Length: 260
Length: 342
Image 1 (spheres, rainbow over the protein chains, first blue to last red):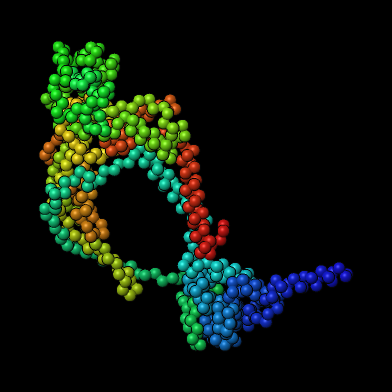
Image 2: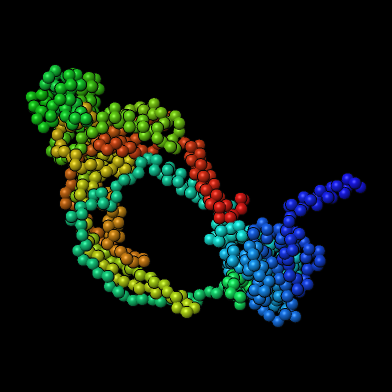
């Protein structure tokens, strides 16, 4: 019994050092629509706090239902203006996932917004990627798993330079392997090809430039053809337009929305 | 008719010296300028039945020659002899580029080249099994060519722009005509049946500033052959050879289009001149792995051509090195941009 107490207190002390976030008073999950169980909410708070500390950005989840008549985007905007979240201080670096349960299934809105560092690393395109990836879980009412996925994605995207697509082929190992093999084959191939000596004459080696000239030239316009194609708007899956915007308080943000 | 050069100083055999460009005597070191070499010291013999047999002026032994040989060495005494009757009349070369690389230099250069072979087997790189290295004047035809070219083509200029929700692609068509004179000077084509055309083509270019009027002493001490094909017979080959050059030139006169579709290229090639020339080539015969490999070296510039054996293990090593290196490089960049390790 005594032993058990000592172990427990040691664990408590260690946890104090390891996860100070647990004891901070910050709130990350604002579940106004009551979609999470108490256990889930506690767990998500803990994870949100860990991910936020690790990435030095506040990663929030807001939910609302029909009792609030605002659209999800202004809802997030107003929340940001009023609460002023941010890892680096009031109205600072933040990523927010907003879930609106006003409509019926298939007509409910979600919105991912990034503020400041969040706007940089979770830009419109990346926000749209997150939205796309959350929809499958959300559509089957798996809000807890969707939240975990949201944390993981933000965690991943925050670490990737904004100049590359974090889910694109440029960062994929198979792509690196493929390009490396192509380069190796091309270099060794040209080495083998040139083993027997290269042709080092070219078109000007034997040219008598003094007696070579264009005697006559004509470039006559004949006709023209014009084709037009409609520029495709992004409208894949349940994701609608979106894009970023500006809160009434004057905070610019990125964002993308979708339906589930 | 056999020509043999005797040293006016000591009476020994003289040969062409690639370093000085003169006739030189191996025994006493005496040198004679080719242009002023006194005819008294050139011994010539006339044979009754010349096509069959030649006798060495120096020792009297029978000189063994092939049907196309125009210069060789007496297999008995080693004296350089020139078969002058095979170099006269129709068969008289107009020009010659003398050797500037000696046998020793050629050997050194070849060894160095073997050592630098990045894909050749290790045993090959030591170059210790060179069977034979032969200095040879290879017969070439050089052509001066005038080409009258008429080109008809359709060119397009493509512009894309955006207006409203539409992307417009505007293609303008042009009728392109060109009338061009293109001249080439001294395009060489090898005229020997024995020589591999591809190998000889790769030996180019030669420095034409060293093109000399032909004189038999240049051949003393080397092998030489006469041509097997006349300039007319090889005209198609030289036309094929300049075809790529012509296309490049034509392309350079049609600029500023997004695409060009040639409907007609009328090329009339006229030979304005052709010269029979002898060009210097070191032939290297190398036994490796029970196979004979033939290499050729430009006797003037030192350029070496010929297919050396390929070491698959070395090729695999290079491949894995380059592919592995680039993989690590890409991965490093990806990780720096925030990608995962795997």
